[in-house]
Length: 435
View 1 (cartoon, one colour):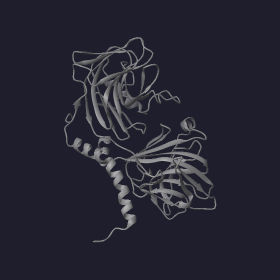
View 2 (cartoon, rainbow, N blue to C red):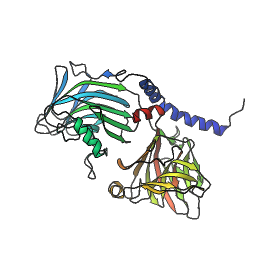
View 3 (cartoon, helix red, strand yellow):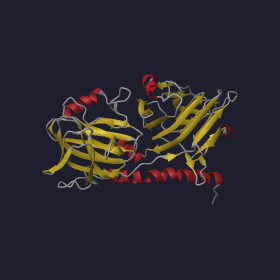
View 4 (cartoon, rainbow, N blue to C red):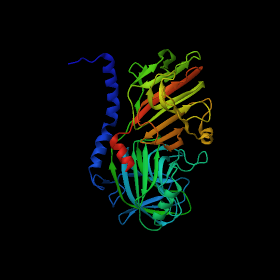
């Protein structure tokens, strides 16, 4: 038998960390694909009591009537939510709703609560909108108490007008409507009466409770019934920077190129990269393995020069060493734009997608920023500080490759990085995302 050298052992050990983090999801989704449409669902409401639920926020009234949960608007300073005591990560949630009295409502998911005011809790997190108006935006995704109504944006999804038109046509004001919400890793999808509506990737929350909202206002009475969920386990981020028991950081599943460019600031919790202008090669942190479908993110602070979050990249014989996509880090309005880099024998494509106007609003100057890339099949999404800057379908894109952090060659560069991590989208997860 051939012996395994020390380096290979280390690589195998680090890869096992990522495998373990997705094992639960793989098992759950594999089981799901073998089941019928209603198999595996369990009720969250027993039809008689509010056992397993707790009220948070304002003063709306919740009760049980004829096998339904009824939420009624009362004078209040805050939105009110009836929340599950249990939290969920990946799931499919199905329910039906009907407005007795028009108002505004929604279904919270992957949500949490924080103290706000004397003895009250403010619920925040994802919300699937419920609107009694036939021209409303039912099943679109709002970020309650967190990112909603910032930078001129209301919705987290950018659903096409033709899709919204089909959803509005499917809505049945004053009647029972079926709402379905699916969360798998970074993917969030919704359906209204069987019509697909929102379809987005996001990195803000992977777990949380469900909540039935009664929006503050002058009126509103809404009913929910047949509330059931299929639990698909949980997804977790796998860090490329790992803190040991001694308080020291080290790379996990990645390696340095030009190691002298890099040093961990252990007490401050970040990786510092300093590159010299007379060095033509890029300084890099490159993943040991390749990834096809995933979401990756890093928090950075830029003090000079140019950088990037590489993904689906291939090692090549050039001064910049990698060919493929860059999520740009430039300290200007091109941050989180999509750039395609040339190889030694193949041309690059330059800017594939940009969003200078939005980036100018959400980018923080002389401060930490978080950039994120989701790649699933031909779809590529970039997110800066929680706001989507790019969402494109690119049939020409590479389908797999390395993930890396860059210090641009032939330039004086100083970058700080922290929370560099990845979440793999398994084949089973992708099948659910694409259904």
